[in-house]
Length: 171
Ligand code: AMP
Image (cartoon, rainbow, N blue to C red; front, side, top):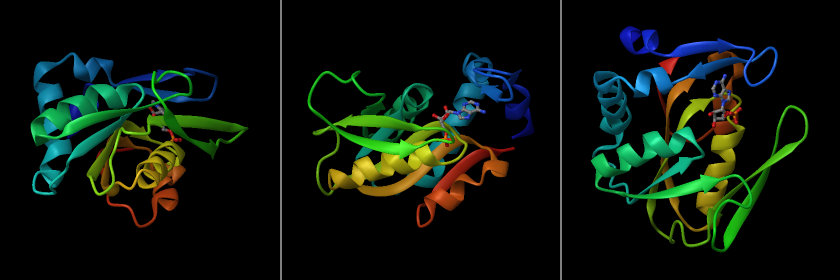
């Protein structure tokens, strides 16, 4: 896991002052690193009967697409408002300052499907929590939330109580 950490680039003050951005593009471009990441995300859920992986814009698309294919599951995107072409359901959630929104197609998950949510980073947990709410509004069963990086200082798990959260790397 330490070698995976070595492949992640840390970019200070992006996208704004005071944020340390975990840039996974340097890991994704490395074939062995990318393979190992997908292995780690898939293994805990290989017998979970996942029907659909829901990936969160935008790095969750890259990881979630590969995870879905390995699990033999489908893939459904969660995006910022106005990006998905068909009818959607929307969830608004609180940020440190203000609010943000996420959408999923209203047929992106169907009732009773077993869903794995995938993203690159869990920081405050708000994005993953809103995504779980979208899945449940469509009648999906959230079997887990898998991310590459968990930022422990932000205590995202407090927002995700009751969820099965897998983080491959912790900082
Ligand atoms: P949060 O809702 O606070 O858990 O934020 C998670 C979302 O923001 C994920 O989709 C991440 O891609 C992105 N994110 C938050 N903090 C960082 C960070 N320090 N480095 C990279 N991405 C981040």
